[in-house]
Length: 84
Image (cartoon, rainbow, N blue to C red):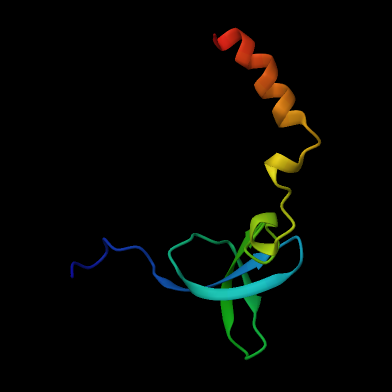
C-alpha cells in the first residue's frame, strides 16, 4: 500500500444526542472532539442526531401511512379525478 494516500481508519465513538446511546466502530469520519470511554481509552467522538436506538423505524414507534385518519384516501380520491 502507498503511504499517505489512505484515510485515517480507526476506532470512533458515535454518540446519539437524543438519548446518549454510544457505540464504537471503525470509521474514517473526521472529528474534532474526543471522549474518554469506560475502559480508559480516549476515542474520537462523532455526534449523531439519530441512530438505530432512537430512529422511529427501528424502535417500532413509526406511524404507518395507511393509519393516518383517511388522509391518504382523501389524497388519492382528490387526485384520481385529475389523473383521468
